[in-house]
Length: 215
Image (cartoon, rainbow, N blue to C red):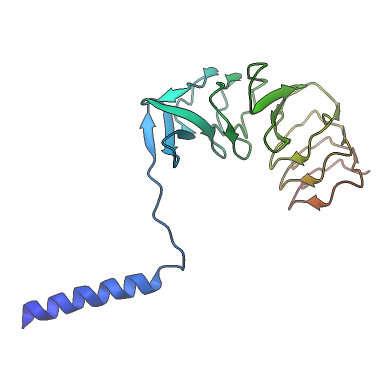
């Protein structure tokens, strides 16, 4: 009888656990580590880098393979908060890039891709995703004071210009339709922004803590 009671209790506990799970809950995606790189596997068996533990790295060449898996993606904030990082080279294998993977990398001044890269480009020091015509990242300590977003850019990505202290003014081409969340947040010396009629979406806190912004 006692054994039967224990079995019923276990079944009841399992049912209650299932009932308390949110609808559509998914299993946690496994994260693997190869050296200093953390990554997940995509459906096609390729890898997306999700983190990096080499906190003292300064010049970084991202590998095109991890544990024999081709690196095709760089995830959101994958290299964030690496305060020693000064330059990064992204391989041709990477075809997808998430929300600003280099956020809060205050010393990072150079991200490099090959001129023939199929999915990425660097224009006027800004990292561009060709796939969705998105400006992904701009160096926090760039000397440019008056910045013009490159032609044909459609999206200013989330956190793209976050904490760019030297920026004073920004002008957008008519191709831009969306400015992402926190895109220009904490740009302390930004005084002047010109937004064209083409922009139909401005994300949350896009210009938050821009203390000098008056136009």
